[in-house]
Image 1 (cartoon, rainbow over the protein chains, first blue to last red):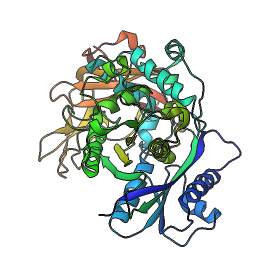
Image 2: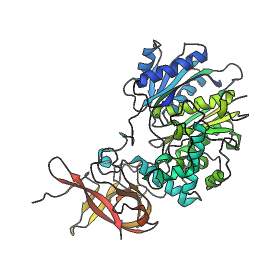
Image 3: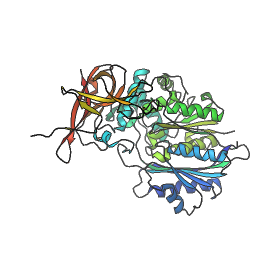
Image 4: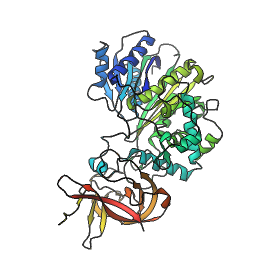
Length: 375
Length: 136
């Protein structure tokens, strides 16, 4: 199989941009990625978006007059960008295409995400309360391990401090644990600052079949969906029997990605993981099998995922700093990690990073895990 | 005369001849596991021969929180309790509203009882109700 390399990245900052459409932001990200790649020719384009509407990716490429090739929108909730990467990488490895443009765009309304995922009666009964599902997940993590509210606050402190150095982030002000715990409760035990903001943005990546050893290789790009019976591990609004011992989509995707890359959790030098809420990041440490089940609290106590720690996680500031434009969030992670592996992450640079992992969790439930590798 | 409450959705719950509410679950004819809400295809094994069953109306609290601001599409009052009740018997976990909206007044494994609660009044003036659980 041909290795796949990342030859161009581009990002439109994540935030709120009243005078810009999702198409405008996509154009900025795509132009930047193509300029870096040194070509404006590509064989196919995949666009991750959940709220973009009909032919959203097509509109972006029409705006830059680069059409004629297949243009396909890909939707997998918050994992849409990861899903698009998987399809693009698979097509290149199979020899179908040499160069593929992958991008993600989103312009989300403010507040609790309204999702067509919920049946109308669940909305009417008040059960379409997305943060409440996150809260149940957080409460379960706290019950089953040593995680406390203070641990959750410290995840926010870490990510917001990282975000200070990221010009593409929405929030660039450091916060203290006391301030996090003083922010209003959204759904106990989650406070407002422990939750990411749905917002707007775009990111793009150009993938190419590598002829020689790539500068940054896409070593794995995997999407997995939940196994029947998985109840709350990924906030699936489904009732069911005890899900203990049923691997979550994140674990399924991680195991497949490690195998695809020929690497293991111990090889990861830097990670960007889904911090939709602070508890979700801690759960990710365990579900990605980066740390043993039940050890997430100790990882926080030991500072393992701090910028200077053994496995810096969310050096970009994570979704807690950047906000979450669904279709673009996974590709935003890949942009950050490509910069890290190129040694071009500026003040956010993780020294000597060679293997990087990106992770998202999406409605469905599903999860994507992407692994990048430098020589 | 006030109109009879109508269910937020058909097939979720019923009242028995004594007026006691119960949830309508599905039981798979193939793997035997229960699910809620009921559907023809078992969510666990995929067999298409599930039948409806009356689920136990008692259980224990497995998880809870409180919803303080109205989520999308919801016209009722806030705050309200939200959680998962593990039903007695097979331990089916049901995502549900809770009558208690103060998280400090609930506890893990607290015994719970099914009830019905009004949500809002629809465009034709009918009160709309749904299932909920209260501390027992």
